[in-house]
Amino acid sequence: MSKDAEGAKRKEGAGNGGPRWVDVAEGQDGQRVDNFLLGRLKGVPKTRIYRMLRKGEVRVNGKRCRPSARLRVGDRVRIPPVTEREAPPAARVPEGVRKAVIEAILFEDAELAVLNKPPGLAVHAGSGTPFGIVEALVAARPEVEWGLAHRLDRGTSGVLVVGKNGKATRRLQAAFRENRAKKAYLALLVGGVVEGEHVEEAPLRRGPERGGQRPMIVDTETGRRAATRFLVLRAFPGYTLVRAEPETGRTHQIRAHARHWGHPIAGDPLYGDREANRALKELGLESIFLHSAELELPHPVTGETQHFRAPLPAPLKALLDRLSG
Image 1 (cartoon, helix red, strand yellow):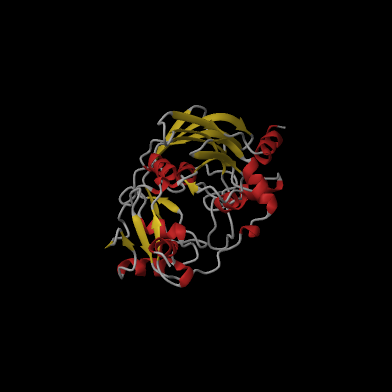
Image 2 (cartoon, helix red, strand yellow):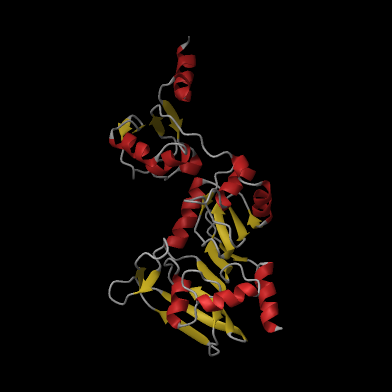
């Protein structure tokens, strides 16, 4: 065998049980080593990946590296032989879900896609959740390197941004993390609210576990700063439709602030009013009435400000019609 052929076989890697060498592509520039490995070795437990890093089995350009080390275009990553568990096949995402997710795309270019997320569908797989938006996108178009730029709760509908390559995803995530993304939600609150604007500024932190979750609670001593602006849009008998603009990005911020204000969001299973939720379910509300209506953020490549809007899902529009009738 010639040296060139031998080198090519060696580079391809693990077909003969040996290590493989992977060249870092442009879309992976700046990615952490651990995230690079987690993305490539989807069937390998995280504990195994971090053990490989600790023991020096993973090398970048022939040298040991920390999990947090950043990769650069052209770097060569040595990945040791490792057994991958069988990844869940794309076929496990029902065809109807794949189609619904693709049809939910509002905007798309080479770097990102913006969807009008349906209520009741998780953004990604997790404990007890076999698939979500990302898995559906991968199943429908596996050639794209899909990545979540941010998250919406399972019951929340509306604008959701996903990157289409590693670099775009990281830049989009940074925009959200650095509060350069401006968000506006529509929410139906329980109770009558005085017309006008209300700003709820109350520090939040994780509270004790309840029903398998740890809800956010207001804590003026140890909580992190959180502020939400509410603007009344329309009054209904016993309910109020508002526009909610989070000035900070804490977990469950709008939901926790609405509860603290004394007007929880309709249909909220964690922070809501049980009696009101039962009455709303009889009117057809199957999820929380919280909709990501507008989003403004810089494009990950051009930096140009982009503005996206998502219409209310049909079930939420139908509920408003019933309340107004």
